[in-house]
View 1 (cartoon, one colour):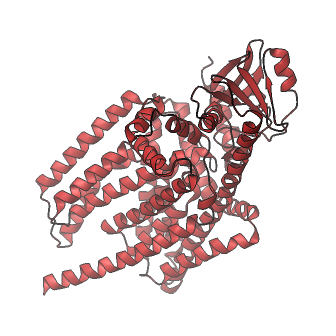
View 2: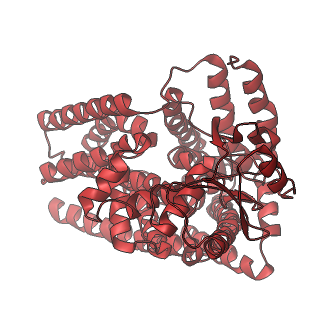
View 3: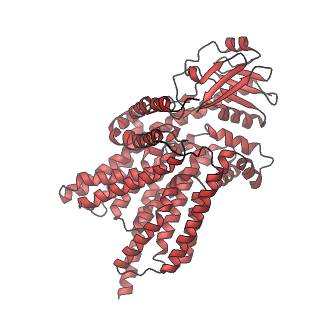
Length: 571
């Protein structure tokens, strides 16, 4: 009778899990429908595509080698493989890339929910945390920008590995599950580094899970020896990958106190400022960016989330539970942020490309927000608590999808603008001479937080893709930032992300004026001054942010970025 009862409960549990996974799949699909078919390539995408298009041949080994030769790519083999596979499948058709990323994002939230349920988190709370995490705008760029899709893949692999490790504890096929866990976590670690600190917490999680299962009177199939063998293998893998990345990473350095202050302030400002304390303002701003008809989407998603939660199990009422969830979220957020203590190559922007790195920290933010909602409603009567908690979670999800859709509009509109510039360029310069450099003028770098063309790597990369010539070079000048562009006696110089490039005058240096649709040679200072004398009229943009600042970002840039410039050592 005992075995039959456990079997029945397991079958009921699996059916409930399946129904929740179906609902999360529907929500994940609805979250991307407004924009996924209209996105394109942006910024670093062109540099990656130029490597792939101009590789010696399009065999997988050649595509891998062409990327591995780049110092910035070598440290993340999983990203290299993923990009090569996507290019083999879709070439220069961006829709396929974005559909795959949407599917991987859906798998992230499905695996997250499965992991939360596997460790015994209350069903309604697991639903709430997973739904909030799905819709958070904290990592919105990972939805729109091909080069950041490896962040989403890394998240999926990490959650797959974590789920498999915990699932092994109650399975008689524990060797298979441990094998899946080890392979998935290895692939995750060889991708982006943002989930690395979480991997180090898995041994503690397995120990707590074993105690929970044994306390519940359930059998744990792998013995201590098998579990220690898995953990030993995982430690070896982590140590090996960390050593490999440390030897190949670019920009690794020891932190100092001013940087640690910036890191703490910036990470909190992005994740708990714009999308926390200032969430009402952010939501109001998002509403102003969208037509009234577009509001049907967040209202629909909010209603679905509310009905899904309110018809589920009654959420816990104990204040202690919700406080522990908030604390757990803070710990997860701190772990995810700690990885950036090893490098200063991180930006703090709520809506610009800098937010791509917060996909791991957003897990902690989702737990904090869900825990805060529980804290606010736990003291109410059972009936109010059961309805108000789902209402708060649904509101968070609706505001998140509203912001994501509002931000997506900039990326959607930046794509045809890029194609327009490239079409104009190809019309006036159908067959460029190999080895020439083309300077783009008269086109604004940014459209809100989205990038049109901003740098030597994206405009040059687009030229290499368009003309199938790896010897071509290019850059963008934008007179809205006088400190980022100038003319000297030797040539034209540009500065972006702290990197200064000088292009010497000569017959191989050309200027493309997008407004006039004409190309002029820059042979000396006089010709450059004449060609660049007409102001572009572009709004002031900041790398990593674009041209749109929400209040928290404005405060951070004006306070901590200025302080950084004042306190850093002078060269």
